[in-house]
Length: 368
Image (tube, rainbow, N blue to C red):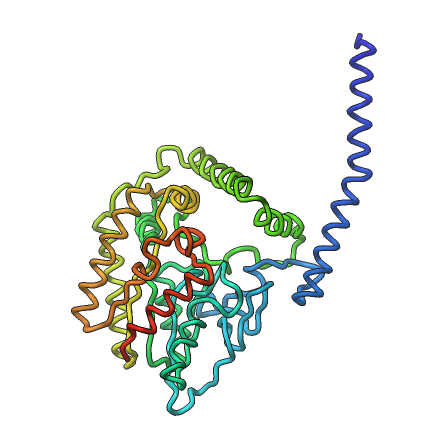
């Protein structure tokens, strides 16, 4: 028979569980309600249903992913054609030089304060000498290079751009080849936001809100420790899920190069056919131990040796193709060289000052 001590312990555990349910659940519920009310008042978010970056900003139609006209999520706001930035007049006014900045989250803007993503800062720089110039942020977070080009062909060309700035990226070509070979158990590429939950089911908002509000305000040593723990947890999970496939791609393969070349040539041919001046942007990258850990979590099939080889190989290929097509190339790396940890928040994304410096570099080098 159970001892009186064990019976007392069991009763105490049951009592604790009841107390937790009686007070903890209502407390968590009240925080959830407060979070939804705060988002409704500050951002116009719906009280009921999903309110995420993906569901608030993106949708899909017969042409694929697009930004929601006048979509808004916290600091991110879209204009009437679903792009970030000021309203765009259509048809294009006579005498206006329209520039399309085609990229992903490094161009759309992630960590910068509103109005300081590099396309906006580029426009301000250009206005000093070319006031009748407009820069459209023709980007959607999460798109690999092939999808950026498709997005430009299907949607942005309708805005009649005179110049197209294409921000390159390399990692998605592992996913492109994996998909073609039909041997992936899950995609290595970053999935476009519109493919996330777009439904109206109940999604607790307090967890994300607490994470976004608390972690950035921690003292730096604690903040770094928490972020490292979260990254390592994702890496460990990916390693367990993938087994021998974790980090299997250690070098850039000919198939990766072939698909990359095919897409760059396609973009250069399309812009020439539509009489658009193309400019290739080589991305600034912060590559150190901290960013490589984060990279392994996002691209679990890719070993860090692959990205180190890719950031040498792909720009060389892009320069060769651009020279063959008489297209300008602007390398953004020198704008932040030696100050990557200060100016970049992770491997790909800038803070306000980093965006300002790459925008200034583009404004100084652009020829059109």
